[in-house]
Image (tube, rainbow, N blue to C red; front, side):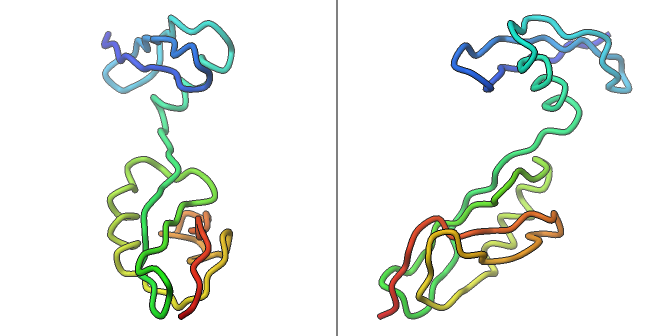
Length: 122
């Protein structure tokens, strides 16, 4: 049996959770959580970790050259480098409003990449 340590981020407690699993990554036990949210977080983090992706994209004709962006949902953690490469290829035209969809179905995830601030045209 192997053990993986995970720190829960679902609440401020930051429980130190231990996931015991076999070599095929089948969970045998989860210990150290203090609430059901911690147990669920550990299961998800161990089997299919996801993150909200944040970055910047280039802007043409705006009062700023870079626009902060984020996904409007979580994407698989192993896709983060692909997402970073894709965001480097994106260039948009000003003006942009916070919440505007910059790219639908970002990296084929079904999640949209959205603007995280306003950019005025110059």
